[in-house]
Image 1: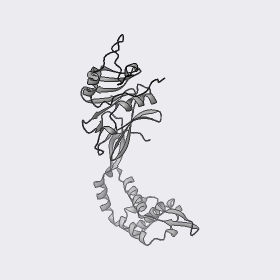
Image 2: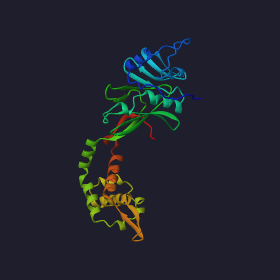
Image 3: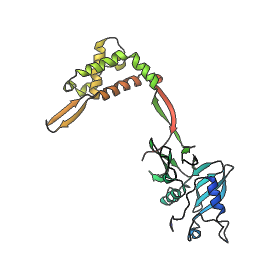
Image 4: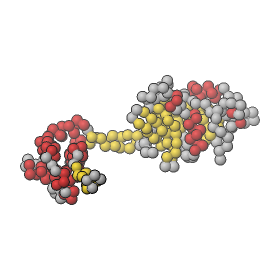
Length: 283
């Protein structure tokens, strides 16, 4: 159980800062070189929060320790490792959030910096923020490695778990749209004269047996069948309280999205690119 407070814990940015702090502390007499990490008059009483020298895979490190569990390591090669020791607790994250350089440590808000650590869905995560939004990287007793750029606080995560994600190859997609520009133009043109009230939503189920074969056909009758199915899938319905009735619409953006899905689904080998991306988690 946690006792005491988290006051007096220094913010540590680098290995050099960690080493200097370690060397500034005298070991507690009668202990095995225990050096409390906290500042202040009561700092030396908080022996459960300490700092010590160590190694991580042969690289010298300065370790920040909570209850005999290493939770932050500053390596001589500039790597920072955070761990929860298998205990994703509030105490662990309170300690980490005091030690880690957070948003207040970097002035350039364009960089990708540390917000802090927290518990999400029962696991420890590191929260980063940048102009692109927030990212959440899970970590445990095995540790999450990162590098911080001196002076800016820019963070690069080194060993984040990865997953595969599909992206549309924009160039390939552009070429595909050019190939079928007549069909796409026809569907968009017919939308201009369409009365949404005539679109029967059930026609989604009455689409051509092979939508793609009809789409690539040279017969406009086939294009019409595809267009009808696209309109049905893009159909929206909102209740108008003034009219006391439903209002139907077929928005162009939804039609374009249906066309894109049709092109992608039938040309995946050409337009889909698979990449590895960090396996971040969602809040």
